[in-house]
Length: 392
Image (cartoon, rainbow, N blue to C red):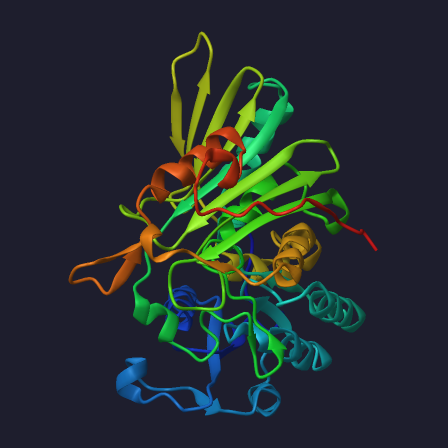
C-alpha cells in the first residue's frame, strides 16, 4: 500500500480491540506491528475480565468491559471485534452508532438475518466495515481471477475446497460457545465450515466471482461430528451458483495427517490450486509445465486504515461475504449434525484428539471431483436433499 496512512491530524489511528484472548492475541500482535510503523495506536481493550500486564506483555492501554463506554472514552476511530460469534452484530452496531469503523472477525454473524441487520445498520451509519477473511487479502486472489478471465485454464467447470485440520478435544472446551449450534437460545453455528475452515468456503466463492448473496442458487450440506459436540467437525457443502458452476468444499477437524487447506479451480484445459494460508498458487495445464508462484498479502486492518486515510478500496466489505452467509444460513437451518458411529473414528494416543480414518483422502477427493462424502462412498455419510436458496 502506498501513500500516507495516518489520519488528517498526522497521528496514528486510534484502535480499540474487543476480545484480546484466544484468537484475539493474533490481533494484539498485528496491531503492535502496525503501531511500530506509526499507522495505528492501541487505545483500549474490551474484555469481561481485564488483562494483566504479564498476560498482555507490557504496559496496558485503557480497559473496560463496556464496549460503548470504552469507544467514547478513547476516541477510537477503528474497532477490531474478535469476540464470540453471537455478539458480533450487536458490538458492530454499537461501534457504528458512534461513527467508529470496523474490522469484524469471521463469521460476521451466526445467521443471515443477523448479518443483514448488522450490514444494513453499518450502511445506514455510513461507517466502513472489513470482514476478517484474511485469505481475501492475498494478492493471489486477483491474480487467479485474472488467469480465469484470460481463459488460461479454459472454461471454469467447478471449484473445490479442501481443509484437513486437527483439533484436540480441549479445543471444543475452550469457551462456552465452542462447538455449539445454539447457546442460551441464541444461534452460534460454530462448525468446521462456518468458523475454523470458513476461509476455504469464502475463498472458493471469491475465486469464482460469486461473493454476493444473489450469486447462490442452491446448497447441499452433509454435516457430521466425531467429537462430542453439537456442531459439525467433519462436513461438506456443495453450492450451485448463478453462473452455473458448482463449488464443493470439504472440511474436517479430525484429520489423520493435518495439512495446508487449499482451493482448486477446475477448468476445461487445466486447473489452479491455491494454498490460501501460504499465498501459494500452482497452475497446471495440458502441454505446459507446472508453474508455481508465491504472492504477497495485504493485511486487512492496514487496508481498512488505508481506506480511511487514502481512499483505498476495501478488500472485504460485508457485501463481499453475502454468498458465504447464505452458506452459514443453510448450515444453521439444516438438521443437527449427525454423530459418526463409534466405528468411524478413533482416539490418537497421547494427543487427546479424535481422527476419522480415511477422511484425509475423502476431503481431497471431494475437492477434486466436486462430489459430496456420500457420493464418494463414505459409509457414514447421510446425503441431504438439495435446497434452492431465496435471494430475498
